[in-house]
Each structure stands twice: as C-alpha cells, then as structure tokens.
Length: 235
Image (tube, rainbow, N blue to C red):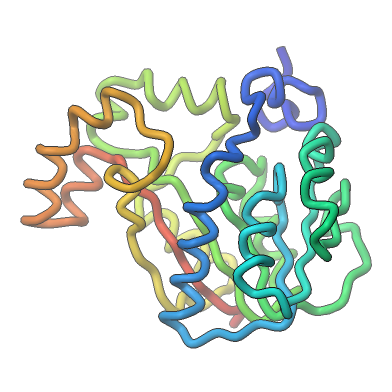
C-alpha cells in the first residue's frame, strides 16, 4: 500500500476510486460557474491543476465554448478518462504543472487538491505567478464530530488521500499565508445538494438544517458536511 500522496502515481487511487469521482463533475462545474457569475469573471483561458478525469473541464467547456481550457494531472491513470472528451477542444497533460512551461492563465482551478499535497505552503506559493485568479474547492473534513469519531478522517485519508484537514478558518488562513488575497468565499451546501450522499449524511440533514439556520459557521464546525469555494488573487 502506497502512502496517500503517492497513490495517484502508483495506481492505488484508481483501485480505490474506479470512477475517479466523475459523478461529481457537473456539480463542481456549477459551483465554479457560480463563482464566475458572482464575481463578474469572463475568463478567456482556464487551467485546472489536478484535473483528474477531466469532467469538470468538459462541463465548463460546454458552458463556455469560447474559453480555452487546459488540464494538468500527475496521475497517469486519469488519462484513460480523457478519451470521452476528445471531441472537445481541451488540452490535457499528464505531468507536474509546476514543472511545465506554460503561458499565463486568466483563471487557475484547484478543486479538491490542497488537501492532498504534502507541502501545501510550498505548492501554493509556487503557483502565485501562474494566473490572475485562483479558485479553490476545499472539503471541510475537520469538525467536532469528525474528530470525536475519527473514522471519517481516516476514511478520507485511506480512500481518497486527504492528508490535511480543514475548517473554513484554517483553509482561508492557509491561502492568505501563502500570499493570496481572498476576494470571495462561500459554502457550497454539499450536505444537501452534492450528488454523492451516504445514508448517514441523509440522516444528518435535519439536524444540520436546524443548526445551520441558527449559525452556519458553528454548525459546520460542529457537524461538518460542507465544502468551501474560494476565489483569490496573488498579492
């Protein structure tokens, strides 16, 4: 068994996640489009670092056909999913984006990435000059319930390779500490509208709705079940 951050190149990630979470692509693409709309962004070039199966870029390309889309992924196994998007004008590359010679992009997407990276400070600091705007999707794994139970944290570590765990405050602090200015952030409401929902999450919807209605920040820190969308630019 490889270490969590090595599983993408060893083949373990594909073995544990045979669909590469393609079923989440449309939902995540809509989250990105909402960020564009709220912040009046009309990018001409988009790059997704850690693009996985490529489904999010495919959805964005369909919604914004005039935008030039590129995706980079270190896991060779992910490339097998790209064949279905061959009719779309998307550039997919197996490789380390930080080592690639690229042009400057209008928007750089980091969707479910920083929780996998061994050194997120070094990684985020190195990305700063590569785009005008940076959009993050960050799972908020860390909550009072997840710490008390521990099993949810161990599950995402073993299955999908999360080696860093965040609350909203910790995620925003990391981004700012790496030299970015946070422009806007929002909860996605993943517990209520994400496509992959376990029966345990369904049972927790009612108490979550009640507590979230009283105090959303407190509710997420207590019960978890949400993710964060952030748009930032380099300072």
